[in-house]
Length: 108
Image (cartoon, rainbow, N blue to C red):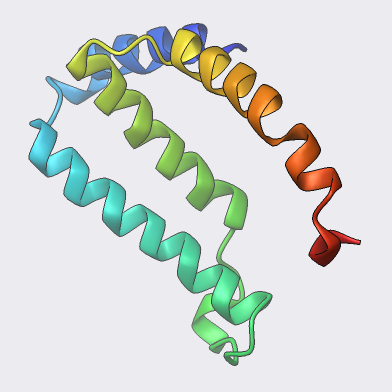
C-alpha cells in the first residue's frame, strides 16, 4: 500500500467507524501521546533504562502504526497529499545528503 492509498484507507475508516476526525489540535495531542509511547519502548528496550514488566509485551510495530495513523489523519484533514510531500522530501534529502553522509567520519 502506498501513502496515497493509506490516506484513503484512513479516511474511509474515519467515515465508517470514527464518526468524524478529531480536530487538528486534538490529533496533535494524540500524535504527541503516541510518539511518547514509542519513545518509552525504545528507551527501555534499546536504551539504558530498565524495562518494566508491564512494558515487556508492548508491540513497537503497533505503536509506530498508531503514530502513522494519526499522521495520516492530520494530513487528510489539512489537505496535505503525503505521497507527494514524501516523494519531494526524499528527492531533496537524496540530493542534499548523499555526499554529506558518505563523508561523515562518525558513521564509519
